[in-house]
Length: 145
Image (cartoon, rainbow, N blue to C red; front, side):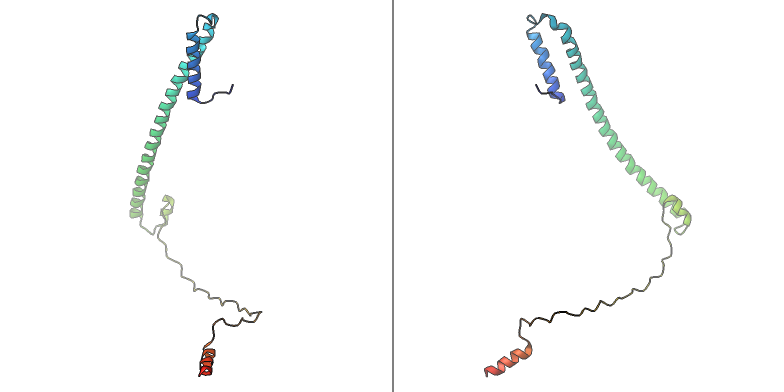
């Protein structure tokens, strides 16, 4: 027989086993000492499963509270940094200790270097144009007259 691993299947299996053993208690006279540990395991398993679900709910709530706390903390830190910047000034290099970038002078821009595109020489002759040139059309029109 296959091993039952999921909790609902396992508890259903134990409950069915206990119910069947009670139903046929007159035939199975000597199994009472073996039934008690299964009943205890079933009761303990249900208690632990309830506790696990309760802890899962508590964990989810704790995660939500932590997320709210992080948002409040970020806002408080943002306000503190703004006050520090206002107190010390925006150019003060001491701002770097508070992980605030001070306002600094910009370096002079370097002129852009324009590179000439490399000269390529065609190795094969250009193919004949697919459309007639202006001279060709004029020549053809003159020939028609």
